[in-house]
Length: 153
Image 1 (cartoon, helix red, strand yellow):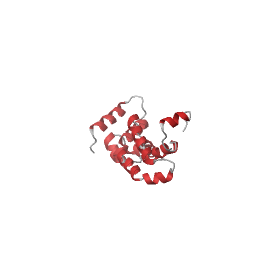
Image 2 (tube, rainbow, N blue to C red; image 1 turned 120 degrees about the horizontal axis):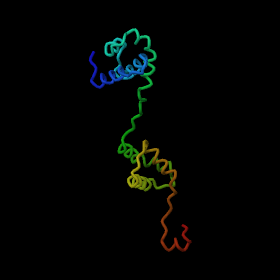
Image 3 (cartoon, rainbow, N blue to C red; image 1 turned 30 degrees about the horizontal axis):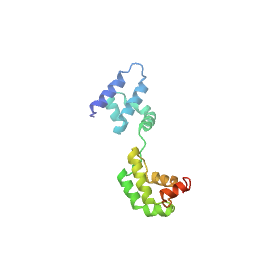
Image 4 (tube, rainbow, N blue to C red; image 1 turned 90 degrees about the horizontal axis):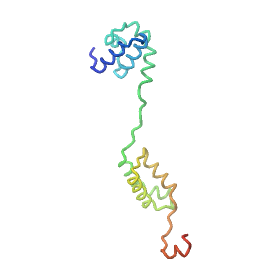
């Protein structure tokens, strides 16, 4: 059986460890070989460890190898795809937040993200959160009316 150079180097490093027990060496080798999906006879051929010893420790090896595997991650669409979906759903957001000017809020939000360099896992959730925190839109008032009312609208 052929093994790649880095894997062979790793196996030799494990076998050279002086203070490791044979069963620990076997588990470490099995974990190094776990992503190769090898069977016990193939591991025995690659490592010069007896097949009987490998079969005796096989349940522990499988458990250790399973613990080493990374958890699958959910892939989300990229930023531009998510922002395009939000732009297409602006009328739905307008009905969900009737007191806001959603187009203006979207422009504010995208400008804010660009200025601050913010990234999100779920841009739709971030935009909904932005809309929940936004103040309702009011009609603009003149500069003089603002000061006559003492800074209140």
